[in-house]
Image (cartoon, rainbow, N blue to C red):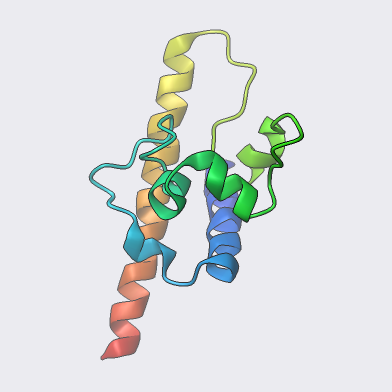
Length: 113
């Protein structure tokens, strides 16, 4: 989890620059990292690939750089031999995104007071 929180923070900063107010677009009750539609980028851009293209993390003409995408917390990366390991990492990454979104919403509410 220690390595995922900084990645999520980097992803959140990237989203701040590209799509202000992105955190309000995400329904955390439906957040599912392995889903192209219900992950953070899917909820903000319609589908994960659209978000990756908009953020400059992928191109339709190139293969996906999973390590780059994982470094922004948008996927768990590769190299896991057991399916349960991937699902556990997905759960941890979802927790990190929920935490980040909750913090941002709380900060926004505090500023509005």
